[in-house]
Image (cartoon, rainbow, N blue to C red; front, side):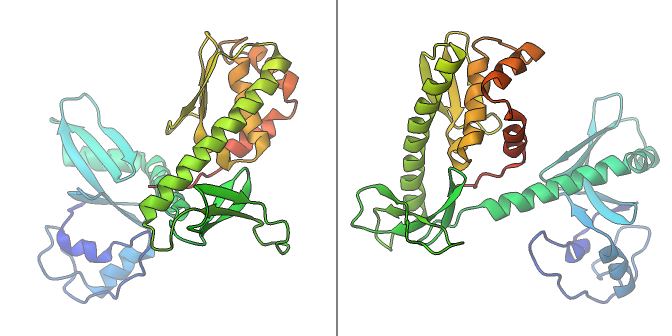
Length: 301
């Protein structure tokens, strides 16, 4: 175990950058590393495995050949705690626990730590790939299909063109956005998001009316949600909240969320009786449930 020092940052591999040439220098010692870069042999050893670095790392550890630089904090607690978040690994250590015991605990938890670090890295990669480049020609998912944004100052607001004459395999739908080609990404994003939210409300109202009749329940109010982790919610008074980002998914997935929330107006739980209610209107709801769980929505920010 060695303290994390600045020269090691030369060996950090970014999620998206190309590896940089490795510097030559003296081999690292067991103590703090001086300003001289590590030797090429040591650098190659580091790069043989994965590298995970917390931005506030003070220490590093080898776990199954992978370099994990982590943040360590002394805290008034009874046991060593591990948290793997978007930034990396944080370790909370009781004030009376020595470094050797921390080393041992890290090795004991190495499987869990590495798995969680990889999950966070994969999630960051998915988020990066899902970010929208707000410009003319950008593609955007809408109702399970793909639409192309076309800046057209003559359009009033945003107008969807189904493009019936498009070639096979080419996105057929175009969303004509009433902005000039010099519009900023923020202007494009705001106008498109407003259009998507209007479409979401229209679709939600139609599908809620359909499934309310089938389930014999009464919906008193429908509201749009922007929740980060919930697709919908229901209140016993008949109020329904649905995440407007569902508009990116195909209609069967939207129907699943709508039926799910309306079923709560009969069963305010997730008991077998509740799932029987959902199944009564969507016999194959499990397929849509899996598709929703595995789906990816675009990142607007």
